[in-house]
Picture 1: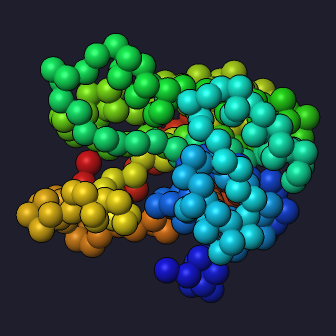
Picture 2: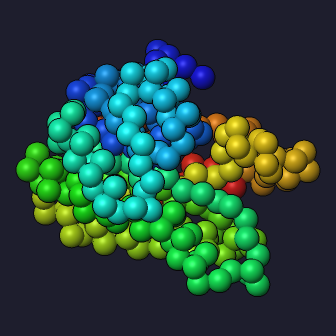
Length: 253
């Protein structure tokens, strides 16, 4: 799907804005990188998939920085490098996550902590790292990624659903703490988005049919459907929107 198509909105306020996307090498993250690049933003993304990251960078012209977001020192260094190369970050999209399935009985403390580090902790520390830049710039937009999984009481991955539920508390707290500086904090909540990974691992015909039947709009959702919501939240068009959650799931929840 073409991120530059004339069918969808152009946002003049995003031109030359410095945007940082976590988990931007593939899937939804790569689509957001493409869409911001098509808006002529200055885009950087962090990921630990080097091959996919380099491919996305080559395709979009965005700056790719290899980074394991579980390593907070490396995360902080990467954010500083982005600012040095592109300028102060005023849009942060915290999308990096892994929805690996895991049984209740098999979870040990080390695995639980690793899931929190993968799906939640880095969001706070990325926001902490860019907040001074946004304050100095007079504002900014932080967009954190949630999930409908916990809203549906989905089982089979309790550490993941816990982390994703916590994203909402983090985001609303950030909205209050940073709002006085013109910094907004919101959550985008994707439904079942048919990325290549989802198609390969879990998109069995019966599961897909059941999902589409529960949606009010009986179509598959794809990464650009999420990217376009993120563009709006990053742009000045949503300048008075903060502490909110936006579910993009075709009306299933």
